[in-house]
Length: 285
Length: 200
Image: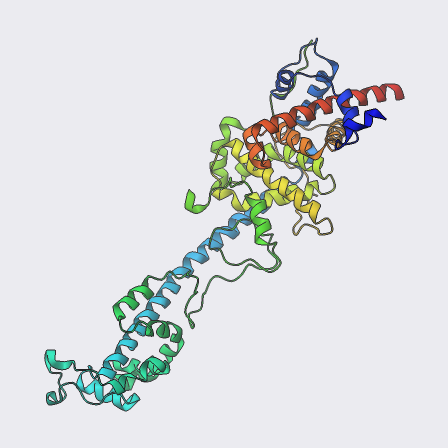
């Protein structure tokens, strides 16, 4: 049939719809949507449409609000849960910060102590102790000084054979810690245990041992929630993952603890939660 | 003679800002007021899209709103746009994962308890529910794009700019879809009236 040709690519019901759709002006439709009264002379379809709109905009029906107690309960739960979570996060940060700061300090001191011992820069008594502990250069820079350091002449040129092993022997970092202690003998076990717990931090600063100040600054300024996570031995208390029994995760504040394995994928939740970017994020408020 | 209709969807308007502030600070009565204002529209929107899971979808929406409400900043239009965008994506997710039930379903067995609305008798309730059900059933016969725009404009009460942003279309395209859909709907209403008249 010749009438079939123009219909290619057009939905099957389109011709019928084009024929049957009433010719309602845009202005009239807009008036209906705005809730303005429809004139009596308007087409029947306009009145029907106005009635349809009114039906969908009618006041709440009893059955539509029966979930209110549950919704309010969920609101109460979310309020309590989120405030508790934020509180735990606030409690977590100082402890992690302290841990990292402590690790940085111990690491820098121990690393500096290794270098000082290796270069013979320690005061004479400490240099002897260092020699006994890990075989650092036993001779102070100025032999004539005896037990007392010789003022500004304490530093000495570094024997090359003493320094060689240090960069390739991270374990010596831990044993060097006593050199930083005023009483190495009495405090050695405790300090060793502490430095063992902080090995990653100490090792990390070891690579920058030639600039201990820089390493200290870097380590101390690292935020506890940095991607590397807290140092080993520092337990991130107060931030357990969400319980599996919790509700589906919505949009969590950035930096929130990981969701439970049962929670929907983050991408799906993000899209559901704020697909249009209509929710202000904390940093944007 | 003129047919009077409600002036747009139910909204809190001037009282919204204050109600939102109170709800954000944890005021349950303020949250309940927002719920009472939006839930009917939200439920009708969901029913038009997926009548089987409408209540589950709205329950999930409110749960999500509860969790993120303290971070919302904006006016009532923006708030409605946010809520209905959540609902719309829930509907889409449900359609994609029909076999999977929602993770959390809020119990819907509670009775209304002092929400301040006038009580109606059962017969009137049934008539209203039936009228709403039939009105929503008509929307489902429309092409999805037209139905989407109509629901967001008529039920959610969003303006063209928000609808366009939500659907990734231009406001002009949204307006065209809306008018086409409503004309088609008016034709369907007329056909329905004719059919019912003949059957009587």
